[in-house]
Amino acid sequence: MDRMTERRKERRIPLGCKVGIKLAGGAAPIVGDCVELGVGGMTIHSRHVPRMDEVFEVAVLPPEHGGHFMPLHARVRVRRCHGLEQACIYEMGVEILEVIR
Image (cartoon, rainbow, N blue to C red):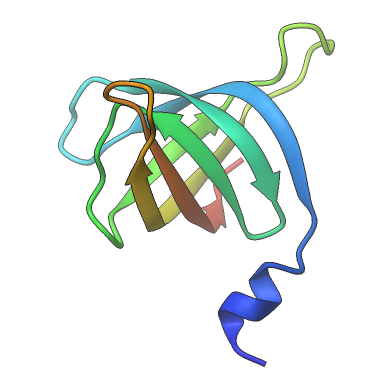
């Protein structure tokens, strides 16, 4: 069984939480939405147009109505990206390389 087939069997949890994207080079963080979280990755909607295999850090903020929790801070790699019908919004599937905290 190949990796893509196996990946699709992992459980995905719909989220809708804000996410901060920290790109290399000290650019200002980009705010987006983490719409889905899985064991090995997540789906993010943002205005950032990533390169395939681009690596950056994300901080997934906890829901506003869920108590006090620390953000999920991780290093991720872009595995897919495509534009959405909504102007200037892109959906990217990212693989979690490392959970920083």
